Length: 253
Image (cartoon, rainbow, N blue to C red; front, side, top):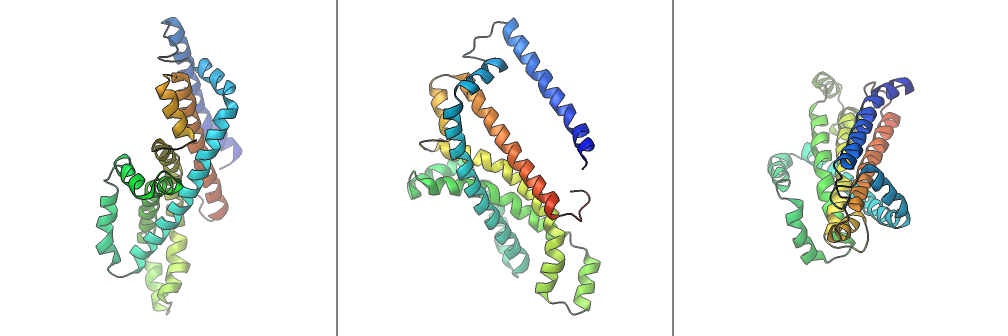
């Protein structure tokens, strides 16, 4: 996408967000809404600037566990997808269990992880991994299933091995689907990190939100929400950029 096309696509949502913020600011001022109940955007910005150093400490901690959990989730998701696709009988046996695993609320599983692994880093990483691996697994499997059957038959006809078919045809064909899963998981990973920090942590955006909730500081809660949104958009943008660099042959990327 060219720079002009990108700007043309980006300005409508930016304008909508600015209008909504303006309406929020004017409405809160007009009806004299107390700041502890609903702070104005200007109050939120002011608080974010004043608490910058403390917020950066919490944000850095959240970024760290997000990257670790996301990396592990990506690895688990890709390995799981390849095994489901390549190993005979593996998909029929484990695919239903994979679906069932996503019906267990993460917040309900969290106390068990604390009992089993304590309050350290490991249960938080497990939470993020559980959130991230499923979209990658499903998207990659879908990519394998979308392989051109005519090309598949042709490669078998000329004597290509199963390994050659996988690495030269199925895997390249699945890459756009893999990146679709990565984009979803990248945004989920931040949410998973915040939930993990709610379980008990000395620092992190999730911990910061819990402390401010107890203090009825709505302005700081909104600052934390803004940081979460920015981190999600940042990770999504980085995955999109990586997709454009790797899949140059995909004109839709």
